[in-house]
Image (cartoon, rainbow, N blue to C red; front, side, top):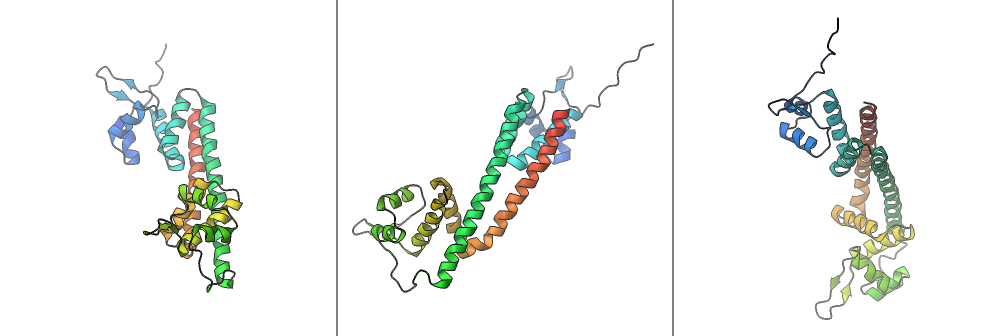
Length: 241
């Protein structure tokens, strides 16, 4: 006497959505974009999801928290297309970016500490006139004016212009940004990365405010690293299925 194999429990889009506070339409969109495996359909055209789809959704959302929506989608697309090596390449790229961010944070900490120490010890004479022209600033840093113009084009320096002559006029903030850029450049950092760091300093309101914000930056990197570990566990579980 034969028996039929047990049927897999079926789930509706709303069942998957409820676990994560999503809409049923969001789940359907994720399937349409290839982030979930294709669902079977009832004769009436309704989607039939299984526990495999629930695991896929948990994996995708864990990847989003770790790597962002675009990379998470690329990883799931690669998995469903049997391109496991491409999926792993995307994962490793995220880890490499996190390492670069950690190295940049360390360099910024060193540079900010150096500038703060110089101010405290008077290494730069506070009574000495600040460089106001591009030539004076270049002389202070032992660089060429052409180098400073390149930094300006990259967004690292934003000097004002004398309305009468059109010449660049550097103030104390510009000198601080140039000092920091010089330290980071000597450490081998690319201009676009330095421009990002300098913009963060401008937003924070100076090196003192940035130094206080570095702990928050560190915590965000730690949170991202932990999210990557969690996503790796989900992805490993999904691949095993």
